[in-house]
Image (cartoon, rainbow, N blue to C red; front, side):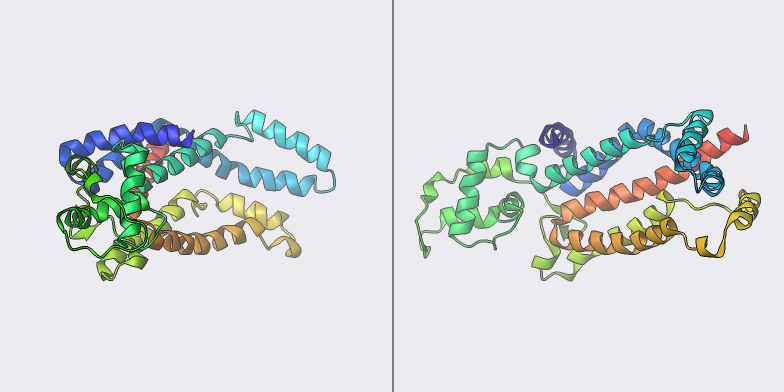
Length: 307
């Protein structure tokens, strides 16, 4: 299923690329288009999130009131959700869609020749074999990115008659100019080669996008996990203090969120450093768009509540 969606997104990305003739710019426009398509789901998700925040104080009251009666607590919890017209599983569908989208785009950006350019697998395997045979690139998890990056060197192989071969010989006459032209993608973007993998590159500029991505991700997570505002929750905080006992002051959920805010940026940076810059650029643009989306939806929903 992931490959199916990656194939569909590939048509969109290639359509944009054929217009702008730049992979980085195509990724930016593609990211905007996908975000626009996801707006209805994002609005629903944001509304569910706001409802969940409002329900937290009521849930704490129920948990304190029926802490010794789990069955009654479950009944009252379901009744609360019914009164608020909200399902305990609200947001699950949007979360599933987001996961499918995430992996589909990862497949697409990792394998642009397969999903974007629709190159036959036998052709990709042929040039992957040539790269390995002549050690044009170190073995990596992104063979299609290696092909795109090494197209000029592959052309030189075809035109050079004095090549020292090692291992099993590969017939270089099978290299076709039309195939190389079809697989060629302009990866130059603002002085960066988006086919680079930061940890495999000696260019310090390859680290700019991953670092920016992590910084933007931290801001994005802050907005994705909203905290209660002081003005809207003064009374709720008073009630919580009245209900809370000393042994209940520790909030496991809050601690978990705090740990996640530290762990995820580190994890994102680790992945971004070993992935092609094209993937990191998509993540960066998507995170920036998410910030804009959150701010816009918060303003929109706040205006609706005031009306």
